[in-house]
Image (cartoon, rainbow, N blue to C red; front, side):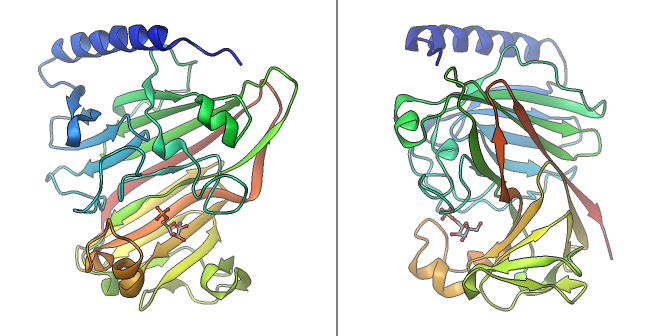
Length: 321
Ligand code: TA6
């Protein structure tokens, strides 16, 4: 692999930071800015004039905030979230790569969410979404430790974009840069934590007739019969296709559109698990969050050297009755 020196990386980062700052100052209504987040970690803030915004930490390439035109937060972020590497941030949109959960030899949910990503000054062209108001490009390359865990060279590029209607789009591109002719396979998820009014007031639609695997029933395969699922206990299930998350109390529907991501996971840890096993989550937080994750799990993605995979997630929040 072509490993860049630490000094090279620092210099590139300083140039990119200067460029971003100059561009941000050049407009009355800055579309993005660099800021210090919790515990001094670097974050990028994407904005448009009507209070819509999104925030992404370089730590984990992790989106931690997405706000609508009223400044309301649409993602759940735990008040107990530990913003201290290597602990992943609880809430927002963790990236699971190169492995989802414990489906393989790498640690659960992979290592991308535990790494400091870099700003990508010169990403290869990505067909731009003309409605994007602000976006930022990030890149992750493997560290020596990653290569011990998962011996594959890759470039993982991600664009986070805020659209003119407030939609949030994450586009991931993973390229195999192995120089020894070796293919690699990986699984992936955008582990999105949505903020909901009350878990007993929400339902997920768009799942009828789809097959699913229930992790709480030995990952057995079932076929969904109903037109929606509601929540009364712990849930950890995996579906296909795109989804709608309806929050009746807030009169809001989240639409989850996905490309290149055949699976979806729906997860809520419920009371016992969040109290006993998830120390970085408040005891009652399970009532106000639901993970609806766009993923590629059942059929891992396989890339030959030089090949690239793209997985796109678009989230929008629309009024509903
Ligand atoms: O996506 C669902 C899941 O795999 C659950 O089984 C649960 O463990 C969750 O992710 C959170 O994982 P984490 O490692 O972030 O605590």
